[in-house]
Image 1 (cartoon, one colour):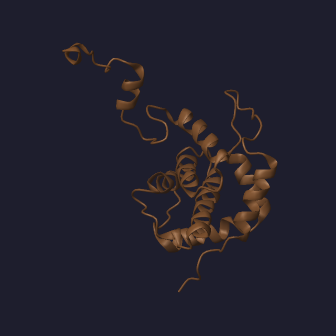
Image 2 (cartoon, one colour; image 1 turned 90 degrees about the horizontal axis):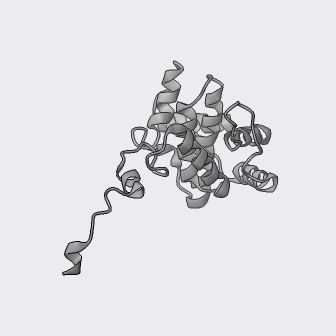
Length: 180
């Protein structure tokens, strides 16, 4: 029969890439740099999607070159929680730290910032990170502006109009519930 003569595709590059273990579900077989570049495009294309911002927060936290670099990661996780709450009405601060925020936590601990993995911690980060529209604007621009190999930056991947819309949406969505 003809089916017996069909050769395996296991040697094909696409199949090999799909079989590789990966840390980045959106970029199979990618290193951190390639995964981050693709994630920037994904988030810039769908800035109201909370899932992209969770991934962005994790990647930014583990890639933070300075303690201050964690601020952008904190804005990213705060945007994720705010967008989720705005879309569903559900408090997103009860994320699973082991599954959803493992790299976010690791990035903070790498810089000797001992944060306690609780819902109250996330709500505090959200309150602190999303107080001022200008700070959100600057953090999103930093997260979504790729750098060349020489460290110079090229233009931001999100349009000015969409960036302002995102910031306005974040500022107008309900904040975290009050602490007990």
